Length: 423
Image 1 (cartoon, rainbow, N blue to C red):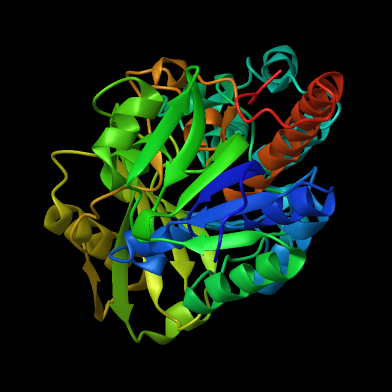
Image 2 (cartoon, rainbow, N blue to C red; image 1 turned 180 degrees about the horizontal axis):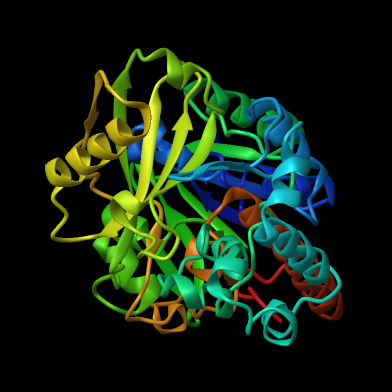
């Protein structure tokens, strides 16, 4: 495909992350080029990329987000977000949701908290005013709503002091992303009028007046734009091209996280697992550290395979030891357990990183005025709904920037000055 002389917006994406935003930009009259680098990460498993978290409907959301989710998510899980404690199951929706809410004070307090948070963007003020002084056994689900998808690794009993809560009480689905889904997303974007460029490499970027001017991908193809949206995390950007990373982030290496969400696999034909919900959290004791074998998020894929996600240290992780501990816990709960928990080799790039000793505000940033960053480091939550909610704000920013640029061009007599990239 031949590129335009200059695009209003160029998006750098992978795994369909920015396709919905690209469609919305085109529908608002902008010329859009999208660089899809999914092939550059072909070594990663879709099971790793789909991640640990159940899916909730984003709010706010764009129409293209809802279309995207309608085609890529499973049916609603009738039990909602479910937990499996040693004392038994805990379900937040479905036929037993009311029963558990009446039996467990912490469920009612969680729902009260999340209802109050809807009325104000300051969740910490709600927690501090109404829930902070409660015993941990009563407010631990509130802390869990923050800890589950937040990007900062905090002490379990202090999690509500960080970020925004994940709406555990809402209906949830399971994300189904694979090669077919990516092709469908590509077709939807192209049909909407997006110029779509697939590439397995990111060769170079070029600056003009300290702002991003163009991107070079495979076969010498260069995309020039007034504005850019960068949809790769710093770790992913460095993996693709240390040279490009240094130019954009103004540092030689990414700041790697202390902790990561790591995927293990469960191989078992036990009938009991067929009766489990497709996604649930297994906790041994809520008062222990929410990491490793005490905090295991089970997730079933479309082929019936179970992934076991847990928050582990990035380095020094002993997969065999942790896998054995998970097996021992399953034997304790179901009796004779026939199966195996396997720890696959660590991926080259972790998609879900957690920072403990470093504040996210201290991470490298792209500080060019015409580049909007859409990596997970810029969001409080790691789940897909939070990504889509963030894109609503990005769309508004890009519309404002385009309007200001158009006014500048009009003052110059309507002649496009290729050196103008931001107001």
